[in-house]
Length: 142
Image (tube, rainbow, N blue to C red; front, side):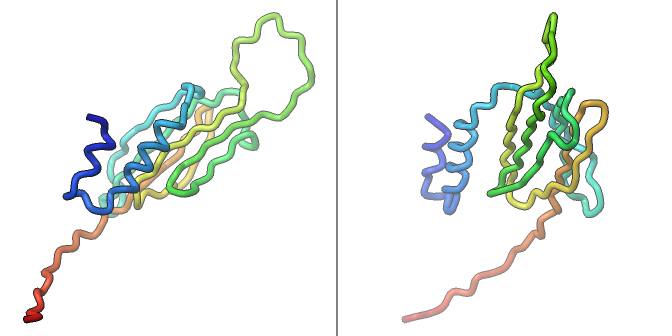
């Protein structure tokens, strides 16, 4: 049974967006470059969930990188400008352009990013949602 079939249960109302997200993830085709880590951090103020995504971007300067959030997705792209032609005896350091996409759950916010020693760190938080419970009155129409 695929994951998509399990989302068609009549008890799961309004989860059609999850199916679209799963389709988007399966079609992303990331090739593993650049490598990355995702860390869970200790809760901050307000007991919020905190994550850090760290990408290995050796050789990329701050101006070569771009981070955007659009349509619930964190997009990290890297593209180096043209450099003067060099005569390499061996070229083992990858400097190709890349695009990494991470789908963000509702409520997650990117709070900042920094670049140090070839590692790009992106901080993400999710404020603790309010737990709302209320009673629904039943009207008598008859």
